[in-house]
Image 1 (spheres, helix red, strand yellow):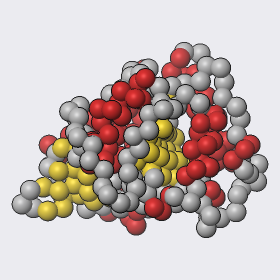
Image 2 (cartoon, rainbow, N blue to C red):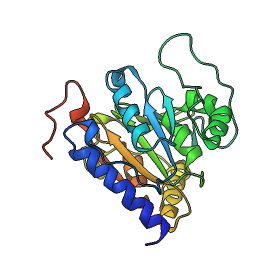
Image 3 (cartoon, one colour):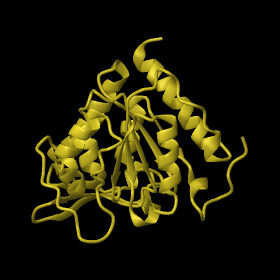
Image 4 (cartoon, one colour):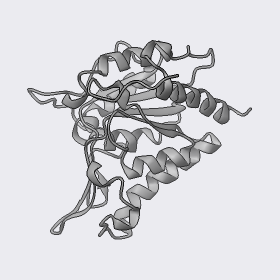
Length: 249
């Protein structure tokens, strides 16, 4: 089995266990050939009640995973540029109150420390949009994992014209043809670039993307990226304190 397929197999097994385990402690142990993983933990207020248990299990299964704790799960696009994206680092200026981008590097690998030291400001400004735009190019990770309730939008605007595209939780169950999209070809280039980057994962030239949601379907662009990379979207709504009963094994 080639390395990309082996990595995908290991992670798919973890995802299946996450979806079907009756309690967090029943997940299987990580293998000795554990893949290199970066985890985006949405630490917004709506996720606060169950983040500690989730992070503990991530660290149990993959003790060397780099966990980035970032508020919200937003993707903002200004014109044709992903806010906070690109490879130019921005200064980190945390707000006086509310959830913040974690700058605790004590449990990170050298790769994670390097990325956080350079891009914490980007993640603060651009949320998951910036994180994905930067880490999709990061070949030192085998997989990217996003854990959120996916309550926030993809919002793209054009100077002088306002909103040209929005993907919010309320309309993710609608057919693609029913979603208003006034973007030009040039304004869709960022999305095409994301999908193209994750397609390369199948040849081992980039990270595979996995999505865990405790409430809503993931945004359309992230679901596309996960699918083409060989990754997966998994609903784990039973982990919420107000969620449905835990599924039987």
